Length: 243
Image 1: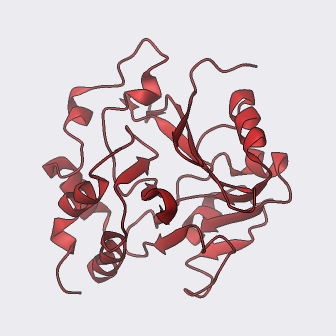
Image 2 (image 1 turned 60 degrees about the vertical axis):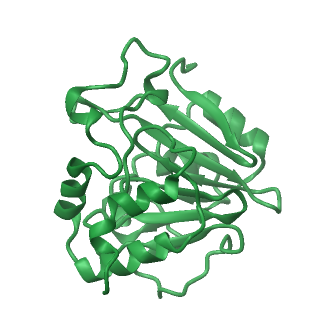
């Protein structure tokens, strides 16, 4: 069945986003987003966070053969099975916390938090990864140097989710979420609540801070097109001291 709500957009050369409505806990319009990157060898790397509806699959197939299917943290595993069914030859990669929750029939080709930290999965010449072992959801941040873009799931939010609700009758905005933006006190409190190893967080926050990016593609909320590095520094300023 056709989906009339997904917004498919080429954010910058070789990077496409698939944005759609998603309501957390049945009340919070946080939106959802998958991201696909066309690699130099013609293959496609996909952070799979939304359903593989016909429109999404058609665009991804147009980009090239899918080589990597990625879960970015413990809770972004719901659609891995349908992506793997559609692209059986693709490598399936996820943090250990997602593997523990995912469909037990899935076979993973790589597991952050279980594999040795220096494990290479094949995309590292074009996309860097930083596994956050100190946050409860065990998030992974990804960096695409060629476009100056950082991609992540729940490390940074940028509400309201305007683009993700742009094809609905909702604005995607509620009073609480309007204040949940990079550098806001609400975001800071959320990060503090989600942190379970501050030393590890400081280490990994600094790794991302050393990347040269200006754009952030979050799974929830609008894409930050410019000044993304500053948004990161402002949001995580409490973690940018000595480890």
